[in-house]
Image (cartoon, rainbow, N blue to C red):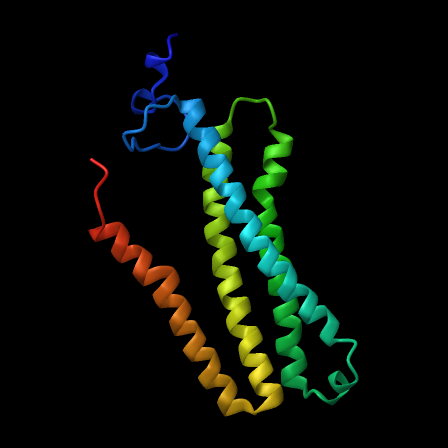
Length: 175
């Protein structure tokens, strides 16, 4: 099979659908490029998640932690669980890649990475909102906590969902 025969636009036989964005690359080249992009995004997401997780874990060992109410402790445990879940989801593509290494399924690994990153972003959005609400609750009070949580949730919704969706819908068409 020649290089030209392996163009992305000709791929119909396996894996998730892969759009042709006009680049002159084979299926394998596109998968390699996209995998590198997924890994870069994983690095950014994982770093932020690790910092938040460390912050949360350190809180339990602070003297003031004993003063938290039952609701605050429950929220704290939910946030620790969300931090762990987001880390596991974000690392799942790496684990998959290790297990299927050299099995010639890179497009499927990239697709799994894409889906995992979206799920991890959803978990991180809840985590960020929850951490901010938790801190506001402890420092200022419950009303401020709700206001801060709703405000941050709205900003995340706008910047992570609405703006990208609008750009995707009305942005430059690669064709």
